[in-house]
Length: 170
Image (tube, rainbow, N blue to C red; front, side, top):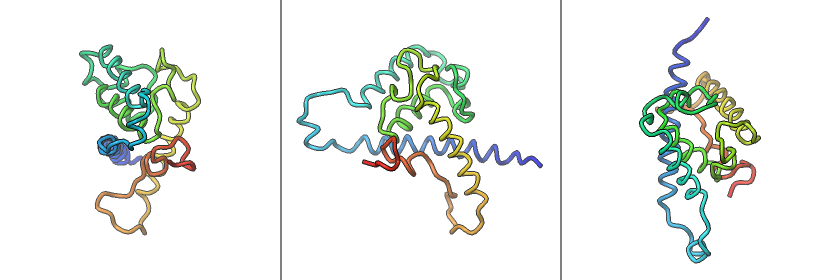
């Protein structure tokens, strides 16, 4: 017995999750850095590195920003990411995933070809997306949780909170 509503709910969930991650990342980026960071010699931050990549990639995809990212970029394998507009995909990666993990693009991607699957963290991220989806499906089935008007769900930040290894949070 197929339940087509599950696919719709999952897609809506992931879009809401992406928006939430972007909002959380923007809120976090608006906080001022500690005094020690202000006086340290200027080294490129993860955000500055990511922003440079986004500017470069945005120039390459000019005119295709509203097309589904699965048509604009190579080797996107996470279903909900294939469907979001290419410009939104860049925001999700830049202001969502990278901030939640506390890394820059080069952590998961080969610098000269982001489509390559040569790095373990990229493959792990795909596995984690599948786990994340499965947990949220299970949460949706649970009947004895306290009511929540927003529903019950997890996202990357639930565990990672700015660290690649959730056990070693900053």
